Amino acid sequence: MAAKYLFSSCTKQLQQQQFRYFSQTQSLNRIENVMIIGSGLMGSGVAQSCATSGRFNSITLQDVSQEQLDKARKRIHQSLAKLKEQKRINIDDAEAVTNRITFNTQIKPVDDKNLLIIEAIPELMEAKQKLFKDLCEQFKSNDSIGKHVTCKERYGGLHFFNPVPLMKLVEIVRTENGTNDKTFEDLQQFVKDIEKVGVASKDTPGFIVNRLLVPYMQEAVRMLERGDATASDIDTAMKLGAGYPMGPFELMDFVGLDTNQFIVDAWQKRNDPNLTIYRSKTIDEMVKRGELGRKTGKGFYDYSQKK
Image (tube, rainbow, N blue to C red; front, side, top):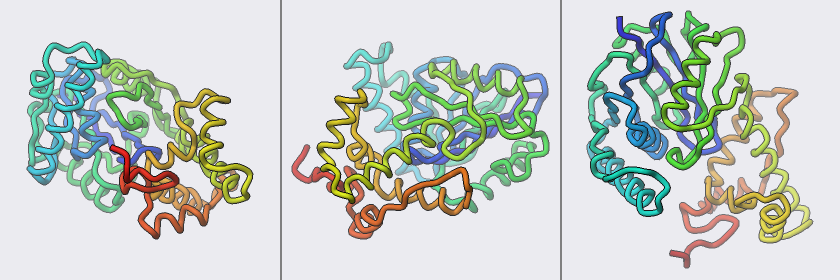
């Protein structure tokens, strides 16, 4: 019997872009085929990483719209060509690597032998649960974003970061009273196969990176609100003093202030005494004005005149 795998993800940077993992057989073979559902930045980035590795027999990128798939194909090809030009990846031809991906409007993998399924649709829990319910029926498995998993020892998670082709880190998540050593080792191998570096984490809000990074950004906003320093000076201080590639305000603008707000809202709703987070009125007001960062041309900085 072919092994099947199911993953789910969140699709915005700094959210828990968590890929849930499930295998149908106890004895797991190496992943041979991949299907990604959702062709946005996260989904297309994972597809690109799989294609660049050259280690899979087939890669299927699925979306409901052919227009979205065409955009994803163009995005992947341009990304590969740019990385090749910069000598950041070793490929002969961007078109040939892009052609390793099958773009399909149907949830139909090229091959279902040792198949891995990655969900990367928008952040709507009901839609995700319905999708996984349908997948469970179609692929004869028991997973529905963890809600109905009966074989928890074969259930774990992966947390990717945007942009996936460039970010090397993947947090490999052990669920409480769940993921066994075999499943964890299989996840480690998949991460290696797509040329990433894995670190282990418990299934806790934010895992490792975001649990530290999100409060750090919120504290930076609180410093700004108190008048301790300007956004520019705080960014410069953290880049030159701590060696960060971006300061906290540059990073928030890059990620999107609406995404920042979404994370803080989600964390606050948990009412977890071990999870404290500052809620910024400044960010709330900026989001209301549509000042979301780079994607709207204005956030903590003005990008309207920048190319």
